[in-house]
Length: 418
Ligand code: 4AZ
Image 1 (cartoon, rainbow, N blue to C red):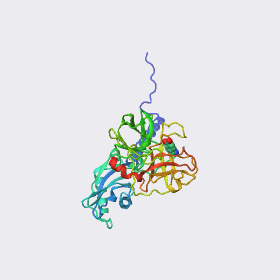
Image 2: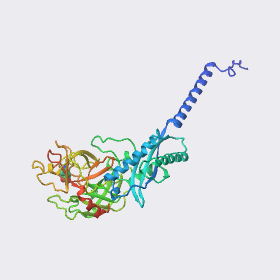
Image 3: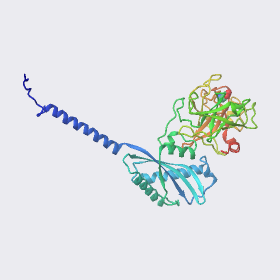
Image 4: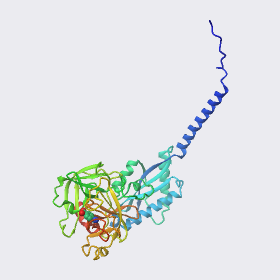
């Protein structure tokens, strides 16, 4: 038996289905086109360039050797302003983000500024032609740089994010990760530190337990306090760890040599400084690198803001904590700190006090040897103190006492070469 033929509409599709298919195809196409336009025209990514600018008529002075000097800051600021003004007035006004002088270097005839520049481009740009266009803007700038005589045709080189980090950590000091990526300013909040907030902070471990803080001043030298090594001066007992967690450190390196100040006096806490040489170099990363050291002549201003960091206890006779903590304090003049109600003359010229008037914010046991740092106008961080002593912790009129780093600038150079 043959079944009756079912009337077929296979040749004449149901109009509802036709409309549905057409709408679906249009929607899919629109989404694809929309995504394409977004990625090709609006989705911008950051690109870094590295270059040298050779200024012929700036006489090099030793003052330009250190980022701590006013001369260094002024010249770097001027170069950055000129670059910024030039790109803001060029076709790159919307793509240029920031330029940063990472180092000044002396030559036979003038000064070379190593610069890193950040641009934002959509992904479909032509790398080679972009490099040429940036160089041409730079060249134009050099011809209009006022009273500077700049060597023509600076070459720039596109660099990866990793290369940007390497350039910053190897040529510069005291830069936070947000500065390395030339991002917007970040504000320190709370008391718990985040990875990269204090890249120079070291945990010095005695027989594998956190014992003291330390400060990275080069890839193989750590500063700390002399009193940390009293009766514990065998380097084989010590290791240094890096990263904000002492439980899960990012790098662990054994200590090779401990140089304690030869005039350290336990009773008076004088010359409470030590230099620790690591068995091998630390691998500098965005989150682990050195702090800047001030010049011996630098004046640390009373009432200026400083930060102290460490894994020390939260109260006197407490325990160390596993996650790095930070505290904002104010510099106190030696005169105020030596008042009868305060330390009554115990603060010598090699010490510096910092705290808050009402107390409650302070370094404590286990923070010893760690950093007291300040940020300068160029957003670089400088070591001004090393946690040394105090009467208990956080009491009013009994601020933390730190080894005054400017007073030991020459000792540091003699013993570490930094
Ligand atoms: C200590 O015993 C210690 N409040 C360190 C710093 C301070 C007090 C004591 C400062 O290692």
